[in-house]
Length: 240
Image 1 (cartoon, rainbow, N blue to C red):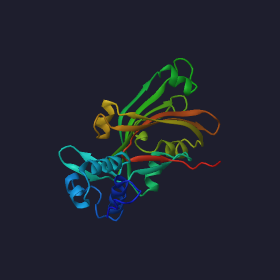
Image 2 (cartoon, rainbow, N blue to C red):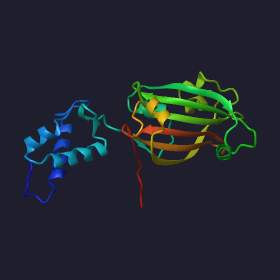
Image 3 (cartoon, rainbow, N blue to C red):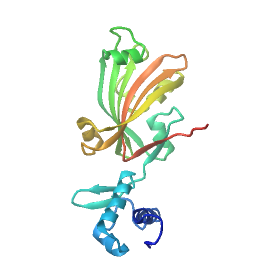
Image 4 (tube, rainbow, N blue to C red):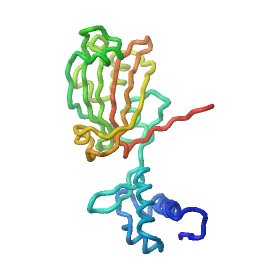
């Protein structure tokens, strides 16, 4: 199975072999793969080489380690296109998954200066501050911190915000959503968020800041979303 005379490095060959076993479901999602020692004996290579291959597959999200238990096949990451303006609820339903939310916080506040600037608010104008954990098939995927200008939707209440904000805006308030500006960065999860997302406090996360506008150019939302990096990847199509 491993060609030691090949110009392809042995650790790469092992990676490809493990990928093939995963894709063919020889190793199924959530199951242990053989230990480093077992694989090194099976393949006739050193444990250090096997460890390098496994680490590379952990880093790209195909495998994950649990201390004291071994290495497991990870769930495939959800692909999130970056070339369309959709809600979390719409994204999950499009994948045949059941979206749900838990509202952790809902209150009316005076926002910080930078948030007020992004939402084009004057001094002292209030926003609804909403913190929601977003689930897909009852598994935590992201935590969202959303700022919504009170003057745009003054009657908003906590019960309404449990579902899709975009659907609420379009169906109840009969407003049309136009465009958004967003930026993305990688980070280490904050301690508070690790509890909500059920990950350890040194895990990587993806953070997206989005400012969304109605078709008349009025900003109606600033949201900072923290996504589990082990369950999400973002893709875009670009052309020259």
